[in-house]
Length: 396
Ligand code: LMR
Image (tube, rainbow, N blue to C red; front, side, top):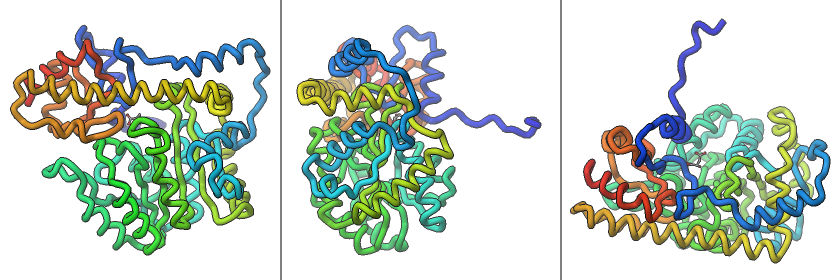
């Protein structure tokens, strides 16, 4: 039965973890997957999470099934965080939010729903985009194409190209946009450019699907989420997938969400009913723990304040590592101007290194980044930075 089954290639991001785990190089550094490590190279367990879990342990509860769309307090906390607790969409009840299995789960539930709603629509993702966007929307049955985004020569964004692609897209095209901290390039468009993107989405009647997996890792929680308010103000209905993997350091709990902003409350109820079918026929209903922890933190002002501080600490440390990387590469003898690294934002730096250079980095030095040249600067620390800089200098 399985004789014709071909060996699939390793996942371009998570596959690197397997390779890294098997590497015996004692100096190995994993800059492949987007995970934040502290300055001791440890995955943080946030204090706010620990406190919430301690409280939960004091009053242990049995684990019945959650509603298909998840914990109500969690879904409400997501709405507040993404749209603003006092915002008109929250107050009018026109957001359909479901607890999803990570941000990826939010994208997948949205993609399955969209496939039923607009079966012949095309999906446009940025060039380049998160490696899994293409695979996920293709597997949901869509034809996936790209809009221009990265400009290698300029070390920035080909905004004219992006805008032209949106302005000439067929009505109904689904456009996947990175709300902040673009993955993989680290280059975000400006607020004024967002206005132009939104005008194109509106004029062409496109369906915006915002992927916001890194809220709080760019300039701040509100700052990174500001683009959502712009879409709301433009009177658009749209999709937003969100994730607490990074912002709560809860990667393995798979805590994410999908929110669909609808015209009104009645429409949101109908959309929610369809999202629930997508979930029920896929994994039935979400797990409890991660969602319960996030809800317990976000809905408690004191704990939420601790979370905001802890998130700010991560954000500030990443920025400091960007500067150290620029300085360290210079000190290691790199002649090229690498200062573009500090104009990028979020967890990643698109280094400009070729696939061959990335393979050399991995094979000869045990420094892991993706083949596309993406490196997770959130995994750099004061102990591994010199080694990473020297290794990069040798392959450049
Ligand atoms: C990444 O891009 O490395 C993260 O979003 C993790 C993942 O699932 O790929």
